[in-house]
Image: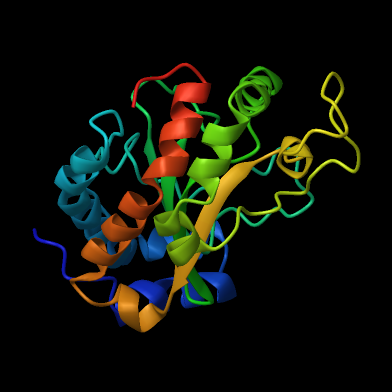
Length: 230
């Protein structure tokens, strides 16, 4: 099936789920979930796949509804005080082929009734990955500055997200480095937003793919910084 947009029924499901976040309700509405949530997500993933390849051949659009680019709806409640079993949003992540977890650079799309946003980068990577990025920023400061301030990045996304930065310079890095504000970051990502109405348009896939392409200078730097091909 071709992508026709994330329509009103898609977002209505998550509004209803937020009011009835329990296993009995979800099991009774599972066919609805597959029809109005999973199906358009799979269609979106299939549609954006060829567009991703034009940005880089190394990012994967996997349309499988289980184990693919679409995140599971089930929450991990083991270490959380919040025990509701289901996420009240849909998430789609296009990982790098070399990345086995979310620490590798990737593109992301978040869809819920209250907000729609998308972008790319690395969110809260593990310490070895974070160290590689910081080392690359120090070793290639001019290239980093050029990547993060590229016109396409700034015009589409603005500045890098804060991501709860360190108060001081990380251990082993000079506190007076010209890029110290970036070295203090624990995540390196950019995002932009869309309306629910925009997400409901079949051309939304082109809109998202265009934003991903605009993030290319930043994504290239981050991907190469962690030792992966771009």
